[in-house]
Structure formats: structure tokens, C-alpha cells
Image (cartoon, rainbow, N blue to C red; front, side):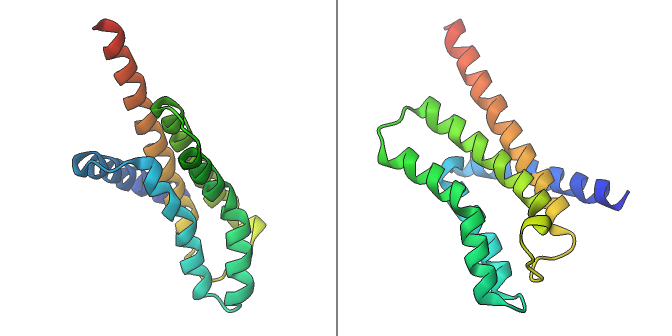
Length: 140
């Protein structure tokens, strides 16, 4: 039950984050570059910061690679949007299984479930807005 409550709180934060990012005109692909930095910050507060930072950078590497590749090549907006959705989903499920992959005692007990809710909602909202934008272009 506690896990469900944390996921629901994460969902509420995810909706708020998505709305705020849209109001501010932020590109959600650019924001994804900061997702691994969250765990590096947690690693700095762990009992073994050097080891934890190295492990977090290793497991956060797919996010850095996806965002970096999308900027190195002349990708279309459509492809970048798909990458953003994939990265947000990846990060949400990474958060959920993180404690089985890396021992980082700097991560709060509530964070994996809470962040899973946020990331999945942001990915879903982003995918929905992409879908709606494409549908409106078909109508015109």
C-alpha cells in the first residue's frame, strides 16, 4: 500500500512537472540529461561515494548516449521526441530496479517508487502530446 501511495504522489508530481515544463517552453529531451545527475548526487551522500559515483555513471550512460546521439546527428524533431519518451521510460524503470543493480545507501527509501511515477507520467504525457500534434496536422 505504501508503494502505491508513493507512486500516486509521483504521478501527481509528474503531471505538475510536465505542465510546468510546457508552460516554460522547456524541451523535455534536454531535461533528460540531468536524470543521471540525480543519482550521482545521491552517490555523493553514500557511505562509499567514489564507488557509487562510478556505478551511477555506468548505469546512467544510456541516457547520456541517447541525448548525445540525438544532438550529434541531424535528427528530425519526430525522432528526438521518440528518444525523449524512451529516455523518460528507461529512467523510470531504472529507478524501480536500481536497488537491485547498485547499492547506493544515499538514495532515500521512498525515491524509486516516487520517481517511477513521475517518469512514467512524463513519458506518457509527452507521447500523448506528440500523438495529438500529429493528429492535428493530419486534419489540417
